[in-house]
Amino acid sequence: MEKVCEFLKSAGTYYLATEEGDQPRVRPFGTAHIFEGRLYIQTGKSKPVAKQLAVNPKCEICAFKDGVWLRVAGELVLDDRVEARKSMLDDYTSLRNMYNEYDGNTQVYYLKNAVATFSSFTAAPEVHEF
Image (tube, rainbow, N blue to C red; front, side, top):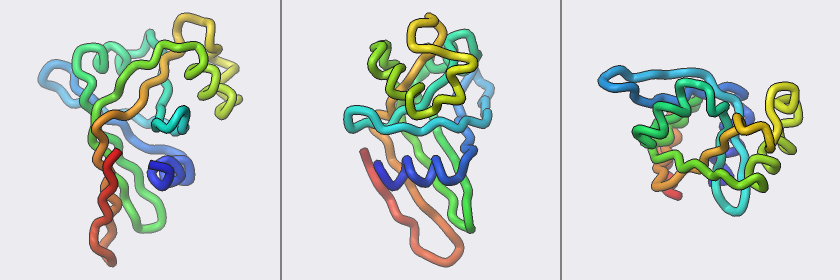
């Protein structure tokens, strides 16, 4: 899980796919944070992605850097604790311009039943489950 988090952070931008009815939705994200032994991401409650995850928590993340791509399939579980939100925002202080742990909008999710696969054209795939 730590290797996945570091890859997502070093890539800078990764893409999160969710579902809205029968339509896939993909958007760029930039948060990856480990808190209490889980890999977390962050978004706003008012955004469509939060509404999509409330209906169907299954997701896929994809990132690319230096000829290696990472795909992570799993479920995103909402953690509504202020401690989890604060930990994320303390790690990503630039987000404090838009969010705070008490605003009623900040949402953090951790990955559950995740399968992460690192791939490239020059090496065999490397799979991690967490």
